[in-house]
Image (cartoon, rainbow, N blue to C red):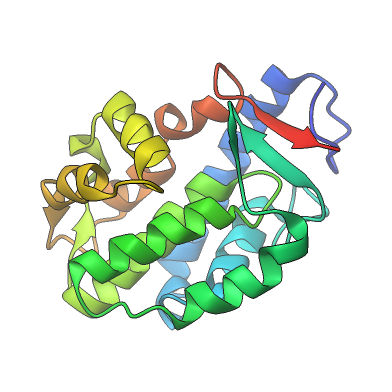
Length: 202
């Protein structure tokens, strides 16, 4: 079953296809309009706005904190009852160095504030921090999908691996639209509809 959506789509595969098309279009508009650069890097408000822009045409909950507990595989993300406090603490985390930025990114991934679309929104949020603070972004075409997913899965315990993977892919091509779009490429988020299916917990 597909997540409840504004489009009335009930098949998860069909929803994934339509969601990809719409979110990519909105991400492109966000970049080209300059609205992305007007957001305050590293804030929850910036992440919520990115999510709203990408998924506002698809989900009522776009840009809103989830009200259900979720898990991916055996990993449970931050419980709803602690989520708001967790987000406040994450926002206060420093972001002046590469290590600090990735640590903040890892913590936001553990929080997983939205029901759907966390990965795509957070990769744009991550690049915005890197761009604002260090004048670099991640060239996602140089990041192996499986290595990235496994490193992110292990990152709450040990973040050395994800730091290494992302550091090797840094580039100063911060205004390259095609490179930016790779961050929300289908190959990086298909886990939401396949073996890494997100589960809502009662």
